[in-house]
Length: 565
Image (spheres, rainbow, N blue to C red):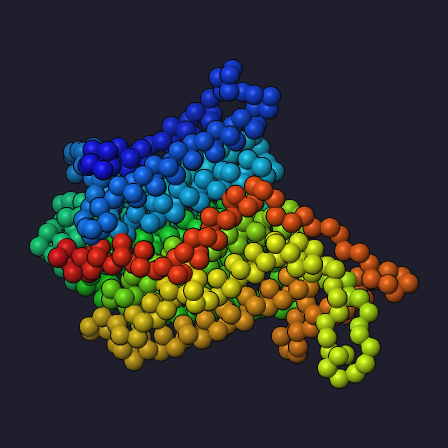
């Protein structure tokens, strides 16, 4: 595909959602209103995001895969000459997968919302906010000017705030305010770092700043330290890095299903992308100084997120499944930050791979948890784990230990739904052969042999902590599968028993002692197959063929870390 066509495709990715958002607010033409205006505007959202996805796929197909380190589909137009700000767009092997992931997840969210619109105000506003959010996210991954990056980075905050505050669940106002305050305060600090770079070098051009013989030569060690500290705080809040993560569980728990999918699948990637695109190539000396601290916080985040999930899954803890998956993101993104902190091609490639894997897998999990809440009315783990035990087999010994049949277990009530939920859980724990495995493994390999000048004993310690985190992750996700899919009661201080009676007497039995029938849970619907199958298929594909993604990212990472060479 020629350069001009690629230019139009990339520009269209950014502009088309904005045009679609404006059109969603306007009265529909008479021929497109249909019998239900609400469904018409939701159909408009599906159409626009579908066209954007088609453009992203066409861009990926036309991309020169033989030279993924070279910026392609570039547009460079002067916008504010007095400040040296330009409309500079481009795509390489680092940003292309994120553009396609964003377009895919937004389309699937629009498709899911067409059939399962969250409770709230007018669908017009919902679709307009969804498309504005898509435009801001795509622009973040496409722009090559520091000021445009900041504007796009901030553009997503307002739509996500309103999606949480107007279409969210319990405590939505408090969660929305916490989200906006944390991210805005972090962004103000980040802006100071970006301005510092621009003032000292005389340019905001990210491509020029990434080369060793370019303007970044004017950034001395002290300036780089200040810039990395300021920019890193803003990016760390969005990533989210422990201890700046506390807005995330509340935002995820309160957000509507599609809000949680986009928040975990796309918005968190904006922070880690900023580390790779800005901090590593433009301020390498500053990153080298702060890398051990970033790795230490990443390792703590991995352990902290896993322990928080183990506490939530414990029987009687009143844990919320949606909140648990939110805390799991803190641990998973810790692997991404650990890979970046290693400052090696292996670690950074692992971080970029883990970014995509987390978007696919956690997006699938949040879709399913939202659907589970729609079916059962709750995401409380104790409620979901209650079973209806039947009579135990006669005898003693091993036979007496067999689980009682449970009609309330998800495997029994909705086997395809339960099977897909279990698939998402084992993919999230990093099972070899699925997408979650490669990113975490490469990030730990990067920590095993970090960049020259970094303390190897310290990074080996961080690698060991990350390895322990993988074990804890497997523990809590398998317990989630046991409780939700098998109807088991889990007591981490003792044993896990399938079909065990509730200690409070809620055994799921009729007064005469016979098992009470469990309420029906619908299995997967057609629209759910349509929305979730691509995520499951790509999770398997990326796990079995990691070279497809690593072949794109590795040359670009090598060039970034090599100072543009």
